[in-house]
Amino acid sequence: MHRTGHLGFSALVYAPVGLALAGESPALAILGYVGVLSLASLPDVDLRLPLVRHRGVTHTLPFAFGVGLALWAAGRTLAGPLGLPPETLGTFGAFVGVFGVCAHLLADTVTPMGVPWLWPLSGRRYSLSLVRADDTLANYGLFALGALATAAAAALAVV
Figure 1 (spheres, rainbow, N blue to C red):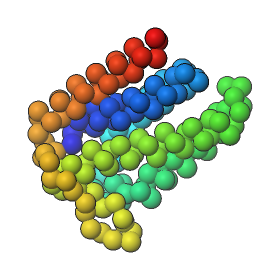
Figure 2: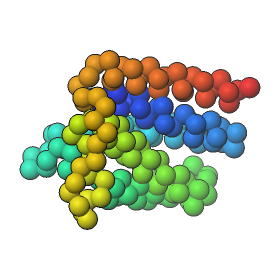
Figure 3: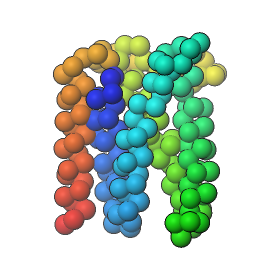
């Protein structure tokens, strides 16, 4: 997928989570949405890193957990100045980190190149081979679906 498709897919899969969170904490629901969308293309940083193969280490579960760990630490650090419990914001940060990266991996799983889900145990790539990553219709279609799912979740949260 390209950036547009990743943004749309991330919004699509986060919409039900955001809706569930909105009842308890609308602020966390929105913060999560912003966080997940901010991470939508993070694994593709490998395209700009020398000596790092595309869809290699940045497209793995250990990378997702590493991002989650970094956001856990950031959440715990920022909780105090924001007047929130460190456990709450730390746990939420970890969730957003892992969820955001995994959403990217799921979107790439539908392409022929696939993702090495079991790395480092196995380098085998898993793929559904449904659409090519550069398929314009798939990328903009996912973006539209993500926007619709987000609008529906927001409307349901208000009701």
